Image 1: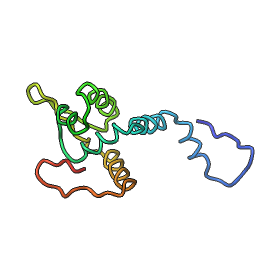
Image 2: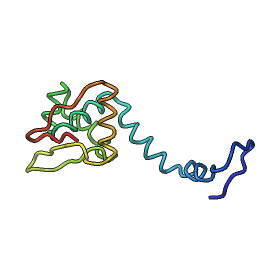
Image 3: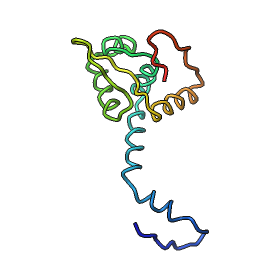
Image 4: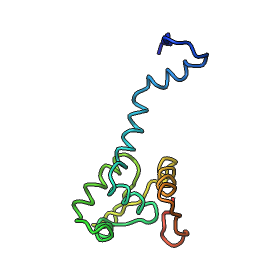
Length: 127
């Protein structure tokens, strides 16, 4: 990438910033993750899966939603890498991915909502 001459000179060190701004793909990744959390139901599902591994039937019951509706929300969360799934026979279980991005989003949700995670124990994922 070439350095762009700016109309106003406010100091040196702008080349790094310009190179990052020109990398639209990186910003698209961030926008896609936040797009997934732009829906209340997805935030609720993601937060739930930060604390435990659950199947679609249980998630549906906890959120008082149909299984197809829950599956509709799980798909983009999984595609964005925020959650993982595993199959056990005919049942599929979901949990939050153990990644820096998922942990950061989990912390952000709890700070905004001013709640704290329950203590770890048993099968809690608690990322």
